Length: 432
Ligand code: HEC
Ligand code: HEC
Ligand code: HEC
Image (tube, rainbow, N blue to C red; front, side):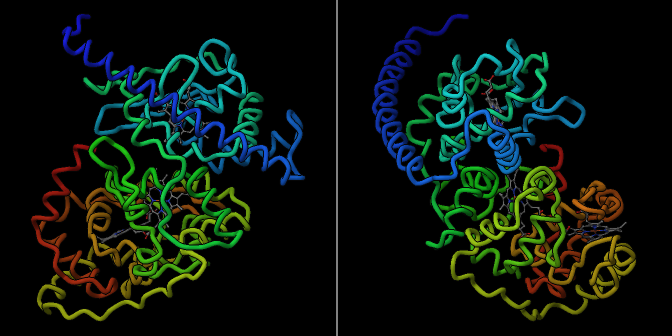
C-alpha cells in the first residue's frame, strides 16, 4: 500500500508530537495513580490476597458489574471468546477473545498489561479503539482490574481468533487513536448529580468506572468522544435512544429511587420495562449488583438530595385528534396494555405514567410502536411475550394520532407529533 508522501510526513510529525504528549501525560497520571494506589493499600485493610478464592469471587462480581460479557460473549459462543458485533458510525467492531488462550486470547498477558488495556486502551501490540470503553474503565482501581484479571485467567481458554474490525478510511488507522486519546481520554468523567456521601461516591465508581453508563447515555461529539459538558443527558446512537438520566431527567418522567432499584434488579418498574440496549445491561449486569450497590447507583444518579418525581401534567389537546388516537389504542393496544393504560400483569407494562410515554422526546415511543420489542426473559420468573411492531399495520397518520393520544392522556406531553416525524423514523429503521 502506498501512502502519499506529504501525508506520511505530516502523520509522522504528528505521531512524534503525540508520542511526546502521551509520554508527558502518562508520566503524570501513572505517578498520581501509583500514589493513590499506595494510599488505597494503607487505607484498605480488607484488601484481598492475590490469587485467593476471595479475589476470584470479587473478580467475578466486578466482571458482571462492568458488563464485559455484553461485548465479549456472543449468545451462542463460549464465555469471553469474543465475536460480539458492535455497529458504529465508523464501521463495525468485534469484541475480542479475552479467554486465557495463549494464542488468540490474553493468556500471555501480565496483570500490568491487562491494567494498561483497561486504563489506557493500549495492549502489548496495539492501541484499542474506544468501542472498548476504556474511556470509562480508566478510573477502575488497580485492585479491581487485578481481580477481574484473576477471574478471567480462571476461564476456559478458547482457541477462537479475534475478528478484526471492518472500518472505513481513515478510521481503520489504529495509530490514529493516539491522537484521539490526548484530548479525549479523561481521568474522571463529569458528574450530572451532586453528592458527597459514601453511597454517592460508591455509586459514582459503579456507574462511571464499572457500569460505563455514560458510554450510551452521554451524547458524543464529531470524533465519537463523550461530550462531558452534557453528561448523561441522553444519546441516540442506537435505534432505541438512551434517555436523559440526570437528576432532572429522571424526576421529569417520574422516577423514584426505589423504582429505579427495582428497574435495575428486575428490568420492570411502574415506569416501564428495560428494552433495546438497556435490556442486556439489566440482564447481564445490574441484576447481579448487591442491594447496597443498587442503592449506591441510584444515589449517584439522583444525587444526595433527590428531586421529587414530577406529577403528570394535564394537557389540553384537540378532541378529534385524541378521539382518533383513542379508537386506535382500544383496537390494537388495549388488549395487552389495558383499556385504562394500567398494563396487565405478566402481559404488558402500563402506559399510564410510563417513562417512554412521558419522555418529551417521542423517539422511543415511536420506535417501540414501529419495530415492536422482541420477547424478553427478565430476572426472576417474569418473562414477557414480544410486543409486535406496527410498521406494516398502521400508517404515519395513525401512528401520530396514537402517539398524541398516549402523550396527552398518560404522559403529560403535548399532542404535537406529526406524521412526518413518524415517517422519518420509519425510514431510518434500515440504518440500524
Ligand atoms: C461496549 C463493548 C465492550 C465492553 C463492555 C467491554 N469491551 Fe473489551 N473490547 C471491546 C472491543 C470492541 C474490543 C476490540 C477493540 C479494538 O479492536 O480495538 C475490546 C478489546 C478488549 C481487550 C484487548 C484484547 C486484545 O487481544 O487486544 C481486552 C483485554 C478487553 N477488551 C477486556 C475487557 C474487559 C475486562 C471488559 C470488562 C471490564 C471489557 N473488555 C468490556 C468491547 C468491549
Ligand atoms: C401482544 C401484546 C402487545 C400489544 C398488542 C402491544 N404491546 Fe406494547 N408492549 C408489550 C410488551 C410485552 C411490552 C414490554 C416488552 C419488554 O420490555 O419485554 C411492550 C412495551 C411497549 C412500549 C415500551 C415501554 C416499556 O416500558 O416497555 C411502548 C411505548 C408500547 N409497548 C406501546 C404500545 C402501543 C402504542 C401499542 C399499540 C399500537 C402496543 N404497545 C401494543 C406488549 C404489547
Ligand atoms: C449499551 C447502552 C447502554 C448502557 C451501557 C446503559 N444504558 Fe441505560 N438505557 C439504554 C437505552 C437504549 C435505554 C432506553 C430503553 C429503556 O428505557 O429500557 C436505557 C434506559 C435506561 C433507564 C430508563 C430511563 C427512562 O426514563 O426510561 C435508566 C434509569 C438507565 N437506562 C440507567 C442506566 C444506568 C445506571 C447504566 C449504567 C449502569 C446504564 N443505563 C447503561 C442504553 C444503555
